[in-house]
Image: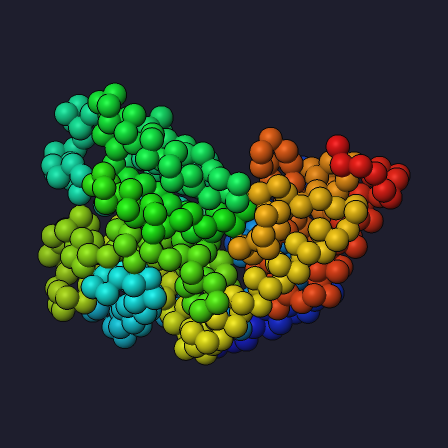
Amino acid sequence: MRKEDLKTAFDLASELLDHEEKSPVRPYIEPDELASQLDLTLGTEGQAMAPLLATLRQLWDATPRIASRRFFNQLFAGRDAVATLAEIMSVLANTPMHTFKAAGAQVLVEREVLAHMAALVGFTDGEGMFTAGGSLSNLTAMILARNEALPDVRNQGLTSAAGRCLVYTSAEGHFSISRALGITGLGRHNARKVPIDGCGRMDVAALARMIEADRNEGATPLMINATAGTTVLGAFDPLRELASVASEHGLWLHVDGAYGGSVLLSRQHRHHLDGCELADSFSWDAHKAQGVPLSCSVLLVRRRGLLEKHFGEEAEYLFQTHSDYNPAQRSMQCARRNDALKLWAAWKHHGDAGYARRIDRLFALAGRAAEQVTADPELLLCDLQRSQPPASFNVCFSVAGCSSVEICEQLERESRLVVSHVRVGGRRWIRLVCIHPDLTEADLDIFFREVKTVARAITGAPQGSHP
Ligand SMILES: Cc1ncc(COP(=O)(O)O)c(C=O)c1O
């Protein structure tokens, strides 16, 4: 790559950002029609830069604007300037994060970030690894739990002697747990879904009863997956109580803090994760509430040495120097992209205090949104978020007399904003996610105005009782 190419890239980036500002929601188009408008075919001959740039502009226009303040659909949003800058540096350097020989200072950056996160969890002698996302962090935790419970499995493979090993997760737990059961050979049918309480948290008494009953039937309870920040409701399972059940029964306790891990940065709200230091492992996605570009996830473990024990390998052609500083000895991957630099740079810039202010502000915005819903006769707050202001970035609600699915679809079709619907307790709700770092009260007002405008157009009636 020449300097001139870099200038072309930055000129294009600046133009694309201008475009995003003018058009914060992608113009709606069906996939087949879009396919007919774009020339995506790969051919024998290469394409000149000018037509290629034109296609890239077209692609940008047809791509959802995750960074805009009209995107409420996912558990991540925004574009952190410092993290983006550092990410560009990582791409330019193209550092493979497997050895100190190839990654040099970047290994030290990664170690610093992991140590800081482990300390926040309370893993005083812990360690961690970067993974390609919360799903893989959860998978890694399950591999560790399996290998620790079934010591021969890493070398000998699963045998029938292992019996039926069970993993407990709440009915609101993320689907990656079921998938991880399939991948680890423990079997998807061995996910035990524990009922939730009236606030969407795992019911601890029900869990204890299930473990007892399963043991009595000859199964082997292996791991509890507690969720700190469930995907739909943003609820926090009671970790201290779950830790005591895990300890009583000798089970691995994993905390899926992919969504809510960053709440540890807030003095005001970190009590939602009280007891997390008692867990064996902890997933934390910085690409969610910390606004770092995708993907940026870590898996932390309480006991140092576990990662090398279960992932270390011999490879003389690769591991040639600085054996203590070769991250691939403690990773699922070999050459791995550098996800640490962007997080380190953003963290260095915002500090713990800056992130704490952000978390507090986002919780306050979600609380205000819940109040707005409660005060509005046209809107109905989800039952599981009614008993208190939601301890969450998410607010689930519906519009009286109107389908949540239709509202979400129409909002996107009219390019007003993007938000998703969720199912809780057999009913569909609109899930407002307050995660964009620059989100304001004015944005929330626009959000509710757009939702109500579209709902009225669908029903033709402004008021009505909830179905
Ligand atoms: C609670 C929870 N766990 C795990 C994940 C998976 O994270 P990722 O998309 O980074 O794989 C999510 C994603 O939303 C989540 O909400």
